[in-house]
Image (cartoon, rainbow, N blue to C red; front, side, top):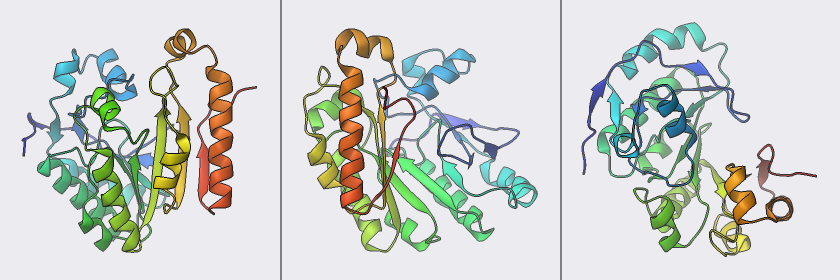
Length: 258
């Protein structure tokens, strides 16, 4: 297994997020080895503020070594304000192949759970079975925008295979955990021609589905002129599927347009 590039420290850890389905969050890794090729909000943000200069540099993750110490200080001050903590919005808590990051994630989740704080998780890596021993209030999710491995190698070159992600989340589901899937950024047909229905059937056991468009509007507009109609139709397909399967559903802002 690869090691993180190095260790860094930070002055704070828990913070309120502005993301529409989030409450508080923690981000204890700088960079992401998954190297997603679709526009990455986290990479763009870190580049804008000068923390990362290049794509290759972004793919070399640094672990925040004082994460647990910061949580010990911040949890008592904030726990009465927190509804849930998300792992993570600017990196991946179970970065594929990085055991140091996996261990830190599990330790952080257990620490927050012990204070009565619910955690939500989203990964393109492998959700470990050990998570089933944590609070049953936690919610464990994977990103799944396709079932085509060739496409995955193109757009998420360092991430786990779609098959392995599905196997891991299915295990947690069977162990009684709350599970969810983020189908975002869902690609338009000029990027890959595929069946959304097949993806939905593959995740029909989960408790919640989040669906969202690809947010680089200029590229989508020029590459696929019918993107507004396309996303309206696909969002409706997701809503109908979730309704018929008794699955909670959230359609991201600006996915449906008039």
